[in-house]
Image (cartoon, rainbow, N blue to C red; front, top):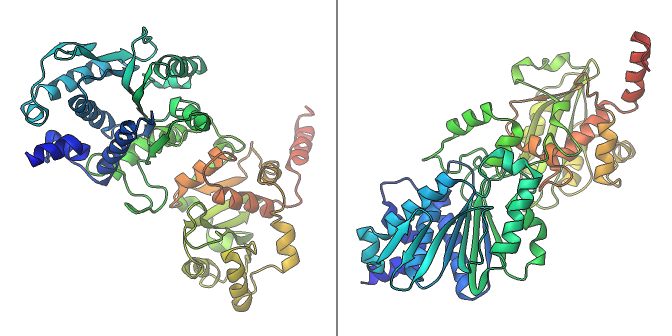
Length: 475
């Protein structure tokens, strides 16, 4: 009996008991269930919470959500439920799955038997007369009040999510129907894979401060883009279900923006914001020039202020210039101490002492202060203070500095070439695609500096116009 009470109150234990121990699970499933449990506790406090789950496609988010609906029904058979999806098949599959859970022997052992009427659009709990409605997102709410509103994938396909008209239609139903039908005790849970910066969860993020109620977000990328308490950079979210080989296979057949949105939960403006990925040429490591074939090589760095700073990374970008083209050869990006980065730097400037290595450009801030002091004592690769300050002029606004570098990119002849085998290539692409509105810009800072250093003093716009004049007389 004590176990029965525990299963009634702990959603994760309920989910594992009914779904079966033979099914794969890991820390993410537990965290997902705990997030939904937290949403329920906020509901009990009558805070009218809105909880959003950004989940990669094909990772079982809907399965967990179906058991959550059944668990909530067991606890509150006298409340009204609305489930929304943009896809009729998903709606019908969910209504059938929830019913199967409700009539199962295990469920009845926990919450007791329920007498119900059922069709694909609703479950009627006969004892109370209350309903669980399964609706199409965009189909209207016909004035039906709701204590629990569950929105699962409000866009049926990419075209809907990318359509401004459809996005406004979805948000219009959310704001005018779903929000307006709430009761004093109500809960809204939204879960979908991201498609667009202005999709439903994106819109809620943008205006979350306007809500008086708690708004929380649960988001993990399919492939980790940094170390955290559960996994290392580059590891899969749910390897028992979708391992790294599968995810890399998906990435190979998708565009960068599609993969970053659907699997990494980082939607971007198509093609990038200030930077466009198609301005850069991405090539395998084996096609890059050899070390001693570059005209010159250098390293640029952006260092965090504190060793364990949550929002900033220490980034070192190793570059080479050959035939007026900039090559981004290698990179290290971690939340690491100064001592840890020395080995990486020395790999390129101590062990490889060709005459074509020029400078190690590190701004005098954070760990950079120590690193500049260290390398000034051990090598001649740190520019003097005046040269360093003039070249890495961080007093300028980030956007202004980026625009200055963008003007030096030859968008027609790919004069910036990037090693596609860099370990953190996804993070590099993401920062370029989302700047200046992304979560991080440490790599972007280094790329901006690398371009400025490589092409300082060169006016590519004038050069290109002069080339056209000489070849065709078009300008």
